[in-house]
Image (cartoon, rainbow, N blue to C red; front, side, top):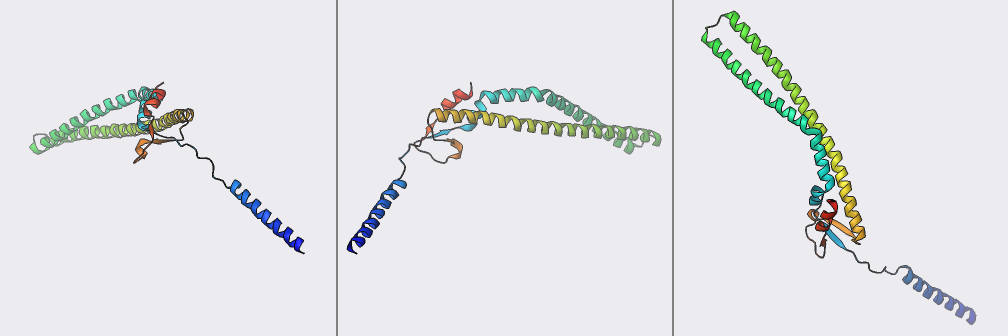
Length: 193
């Protein structure tokens, strides 16, 4: 019976010490890794990037002529509006003076109303064209900015991997940082290639 008790005690103690060894090995803290943090002025990277410059040129090439044409049409409509205002003032002055007959006033009033109606239609068409152009420009710009963002992020990620940088933070998003390396100058060279 003594031997049986001794064996059980030894077995329990052995298993408990084996468990203690296992628990310290299974749950041992991993070796400390060095975390390198870098900051970057992301807006500056984007706006200085070659892909952004190319995208801006493509944007201007695509929309500049239409925009210029609409500006010219807007100036033309402004001149027509001034002409209509003068016609209206003259019509009012003629009406108050009483120098014109009813038929003459009616003829001038009809001419004014026709010009005003034509102007209104032109102006509405102009506004529709401006809104359509604005929508197309916004849609194009959003697509292009997504492309630019992806290209710049890919460059940042590749640089970070090559330099063994753990985290790259946009400097605007950080209120305070110490022991962080500003990699903006190095990345500016890369995004401009």
